Image (cartoon, rainbow, N blue to C red; front, top):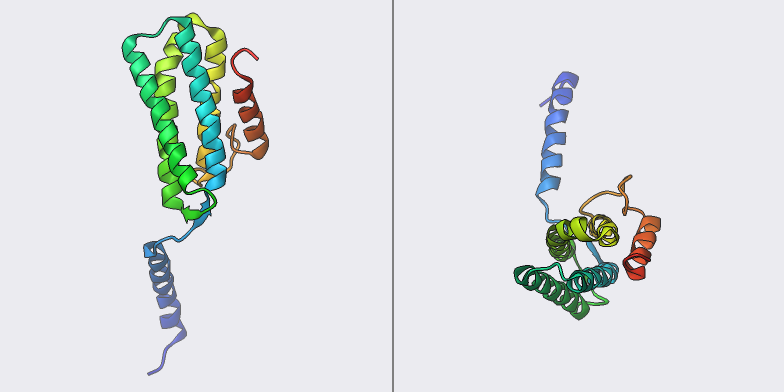
Length: 172
């Protein structure tokens, strides 16, 4: 059986396509260290507790909102406990993304409750709440949910600034 150059050249794109599709079907085995996400989860915990304390002390929070933010605080603590149990281990990226999505969801829920209150009663709390979007970007970047880009929070320098601002607190 002989092959002409034309037949070979016409089959190459098909072979390339099959190889590309075969690569898509394989299960990824990428892994990462729990410690970097756990460290950021501790920052999220500080952010959540600071926001909760400031909202409660302002006296502008309803009983339903208090229940909701207490549930957020408990969920963040639960995520941190799960990470602590796996500390020092290397896990699949899917596990990290699950934790990251949970942390992001809790930040978003807290912001949904706190931002309207802060906008009406406290510019200092409102300014502090802006750190939430930076924390979300940091978490996404750690577990590869977003690529490093020009988004604030995506570089190590941004991470240091945001985390330091979280620990300084409101109005600092």
